[in-house]
Length: 263
Length: 264
Ligand SMILES: Nc1ncnc2c1ncn2[C@@H]1O[C@H](COP(=O)(O)OP(=O)(O)OP(=O)(O)O)[C@@H](O)[C@H]1O
Ligand SMILES: [Mg+2]
Image (tube, rainbow over all chains, first blue to last red; front, side, top):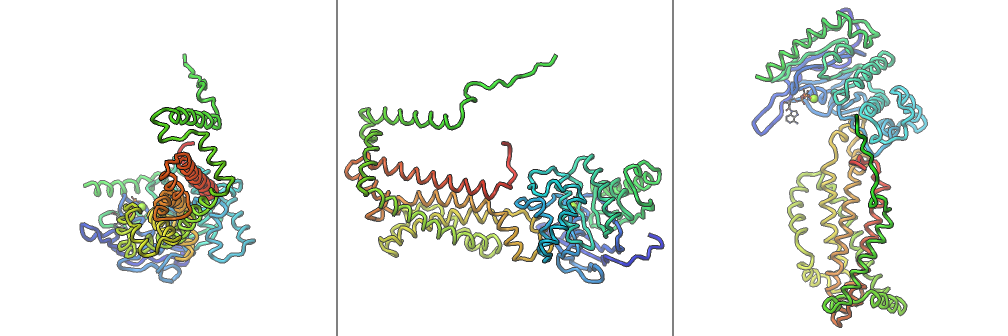
């Protein structure tokens, strides 16, 4: 964003990722560089297979780049750590733990005392509006509720960066808009650096300060769009002409990429 | 006009499960009685009252209990050793590719050989004492359990492991807090299959010569055409089997209630 002097949080530097497959080498990411500022909300859109998840995994430390580096607060990323929280599309809750114990999982690993952990769990379950379900098991929750637990779990360890890989991808449209609004409120209240992957252009625009459009084969950044719509935003924002202008532009770019892939 | 289909429960749906149990028992009992009083069937099947008489006689003079005791001891010891060994082996196989590649073909190979075939090897190696029987039961139950549990370890959802790692879990935490609980259903299924194969192998193991044991009791009685004792032995083995099964099912309900289930 213009005139933005927030400190740099995540530096992605010339990241290349190649996979060895049976049909030879496959280049998933071909020189991706991106700077993300502190408390910035960045979304990534692009056709399926363009390397969005691969990039997220590399930032998370779950995968290693073939070339290039990722730095968080100037420190090179070499392995996963609680400074980078991840929310997965498939919720990834531990089914044998109650909602409360799921949220507590990262806290106990961090060595947070039981009493304090309990308070934090309460706080974050309240944040996602699930206080009443502390003792429930994941199988007793709907998809939207599961994803709320996963978000609470990621927030509880207080990461500097929140990485989300199509977190609302498996939800119905209504639940999805509801969780978008909740995420917006949460993000405005408790600011975090967010890296958010989605297929949904509208979702990207409503949430983000910047939208990164990726192109496929091999995965590269095609365009970065600053979304100069002031916060707080809500579902009404989706009706403004500004919003539609951004949405149409990005949608067109993504659609072109999609056609490229189809060729 | 809409037609509401009333789901009127019919007569069969109204019978509660315990009543079905009784119906099933009475039917079997009648069938058994019919067969045992018939000319041909009577040669094979003693009548129910003969079996009950045998039970009372052997129970009150104390000859039955050592048979049951020895058999139970062998089954449980063999099974427990198998269980304790199979868990680390299964985890090592699931965790480390080279170990898996070397062990798996052999486990699969031996698993398909009936224990009766390799009993002579064990007798030569370990004699005809308790040890040999426990070893046979151990091998049989170990093989079944290791295969089942290791499948479970392989099937642990990798997203759960990723989720744990990004929350700060290291290998040891992942093992204790993710892999073990995620594999519990398989461990319990393994235990159930292991117990059943331990029991199956028992009779074979006791054929290696034993002075006591249900398998031996059956074996000896058949030599005298004492069909009542044979049936009694078979029943007791069946009852032990079903009790062990029920016990593991109870554990499964207690320990794996968190699983998503289809229907119900
Ligand atoms: N472990 C792997 N081994 C081989 N190829 C892989 C691996 N992981 C990803 N790829 C390939 O890398 C490319 C990028 O995958 P990635 O999952 O990052 O795409 P994506 O943009 O997240 O797609 P989607 O929108 O469908 O989730 C794909 O072509 C995929 O087949
Ligand atoms: Mg993806």
